[in-house]
Amino acid sequence: MRKFEKRQVGVLALQGDYERHQHQLGLLRVKNRLVRLPADLTEIDSLIIPGGESTTMDILLDRFHLREPLTEFGRSHPVYGTCAGMIMVATSIRDNQAGVKPLGLIDIEVVRMGYGRQVHSFEEILPVSLGNGTSSLTATFIRAPRIARTGPDVTVLASYKDHPVLVRRDNVLAGSFHTELDDDTTLLRYFIQEFS
Amino acid sequence: MVKQFEDKAHKVKIGLAEMLKGGVIMDVTTPEQAKIAEQSGAAAVMALERVPSQIRAEGGVARMADLDIIEGIKRDVTIPVMAKCRIGHLIEGRVLEALEVDFIDESEVLTPADEKYHVDKWGFKVPFVCGCRNLGEALRRISEGAAMIRTKGEAGTGDVSQAVKHLREIGSVMKSLTIMSPEELYGVAKDFRVSLDLVKMVAATGKLPVPNFAAGGIATPADAALCMHLGAEAVFVGSGIFMSDDPEKRAKAIVSATTHWQDFNVIAEYSHGLGGAMKGIQASSIPIEEQLQTR
Image (cartoon, rainbow over all chains, first blue to last red; front, side):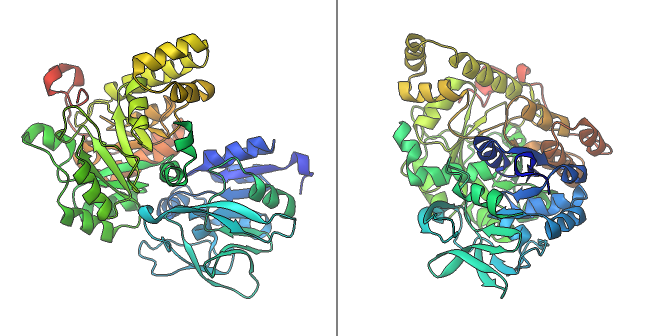
């Protein structure tokens, strides 16, 4: 692991809101690069899988030969999956209509669009327990996936209406919602500082 | 105006537009086409009865799609489903919202229902995208509540020149705003018939306050990459895919070229063996009264 200030965070940029994550990394002055091909993974110390369409990302992971190297990377490096990214790092998808093959980096089962289609998308102030003094986050749920089950080694960091929405296992962080649409970098800072 | 952008309801609408970035939104007329689009890597589909080139060839009044088609497509794919309503037809908009489509395109491709006004989009829960040819038109649509802007281009032609023209026009005027004095910005707001606050937002960032996509005449992987190069954040492909010789292959190629728009080797790799593109018509040969972009 490189020294903190030398570390480079990758953002998977096959499709989705990768620019918003890059923008937030820029606000924190953290070196970053977009990941579109396997060679990009050798340049980074941790990876963010952004929101977007998991069906699209799943197809493009195969098309551009990223599935194996990315899974390998995720077993030994920090990975943060948000929204579609959370679907990608999960172990299973309930009623998996599109046949998306999740990477299995954290033992959770997710339900795609578990909070409904776009007209049901919403923003909430969520209580969180990150253990670093942060008590709440502004969370945006967009056609968001719901976590239906968590494995025994998964820690729940935040819940909404009795369902976990932010979870952690070792080096993997996953959330149903977005915080990158605003300029609040709390969760990103948590990922960079606490995951290594 | 600026306050409305901080409104939660509007933020979640723009949020979905953010999630579609870097992707391709494909026009489809059947659930079978929607599945082909999804399996090719489309980030969303646009459900309609006839693609723009068919509307152009067949004429007649083009309206919101048959709801059974939209329902069928919604059932069969997991990616977001968009649908078009006629310009100014707020009831078609409400019906599509009741159907829970994920995005509405208030589109010049359909026959306008109101010659004077567009839909007031602020009161809807579903986000709207609107077409534009220039920055003034874009900002007027944003003032009405559009959560995404796309170029109009000239739909159904397979000729990308008009989308290019509109992207360049929007991009260069936004750039010029960033170096203008306050008095000049006031003049711009007057000319554009939009609020000074909105003009100042663009001047401060050099960007639209909502995502900016390309549409109209995109027919090849290289067309899609060109639009991305000119500042589009995602692309819509209408007739270009399903009016070509090999829709599945072409759809894949356009998606790959949009993701890797800066990597010419990837674009070249996926541009092989696609069969014929849609035949198309030169946009500048279409008389003004038959152009869709002037609607």
